[in-house]
Length: 193
Length: 317
Image (cartoon, rainbow over all chains, first blue to last red; front, side, top):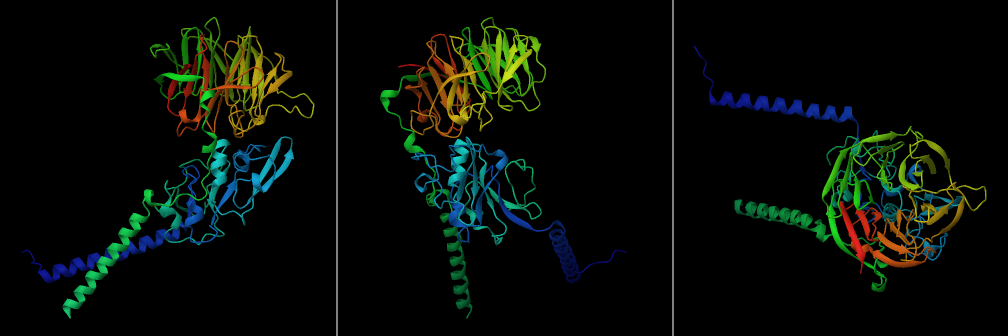
């Protein structure tokens, strides 16, 4: 003899299962978050198009995005496309020859004809002007990264929202940087932003 | 009361919709403000029309080009793992499978084809059959350019920053690094992983020293004899960190050069004085790579445009 289930009990049962699965999902989601660690925002330098929005759209002023230098890739050029303005008068450290609007790159003579270029982070505003110059004429050793000692890790990164090349995404906090030469494009697991 | 709640709810929905719409529209690509930090070299791209000496007369599409050369009325083209021989009209004469990742190709006057890879070389006959294979020159080698003088093969090694000298059986004879011990001659400076050399009709060996923005003439034993070239964004000089990228010779010894950054192809006299412009930057819109160059028997200039994946023929105006 089959037992009939009335409507009230059916709805009750459904609500119980829904609540149960919901709670289980919530616990699972929370556990996932605690076991996989935190996520932070970072720029993929191979996607970056040097659009300048890192300087203008970060909630911080100056931006938490800074130029970093992959020294193993650098050619230590005398005529550096990231340091010297196109049409510069002479290849020296005079302000009128510098490409950087805030003079955030230091040029240091190593030995003829090699020069080292160092980023002064306090002055860098993340405008990517040097990045574009270095990419167009050099090896692309200058590139942008979000500095995590400055970044406030917004829930929704204001720069990521306007990045034209979707170069900014969340990466595991255990591997917070994507320095050129230190990772292969696409090799790092990236969370959906 | 119910009506008041309804009005409030409708107003709230409208307000939310307006905010979402404004946000969506204001972040559209065409609505975003211009980059106040725009890097621009546009002012260096226009060229005085009186300097233009050539016009483009033909384009041939090619797949994944790596390098090419011209010899005996034919184009020899390398891609990922194939050697193609094509006529100037684009008709394929030979398509031979070769080792993966070739870097450069050269054909001598007898039809022997020499292909360089990262650190070794292979010689083929005119049908693409293997004749010789060199040993690995060095584990850090990157062999990017080839030239022949008589029975001597010169190989530019961008990895080791030196030039290898081999015989035509691909046996190493010696190498040189362009250093002399004199303080102002400090060898080859290569900020980019490309190193180019060529031999002209007078059997003179010329080599790019791209970090110095110069093209240098060496004796066949590796002694620097003379050089020319100046760094400059203006049309007279070589721009960027590492130009000229490629060069070739016209039959009378003039140089045809190509540059990356501001992509442009120019002709220089033997003295190093700019003579004319073959292809200004306007002919490479959105281009990134310097085109490789070959010159045919009629002094017509072939460019291998890596961005457009195209062979482009230029003839004098």
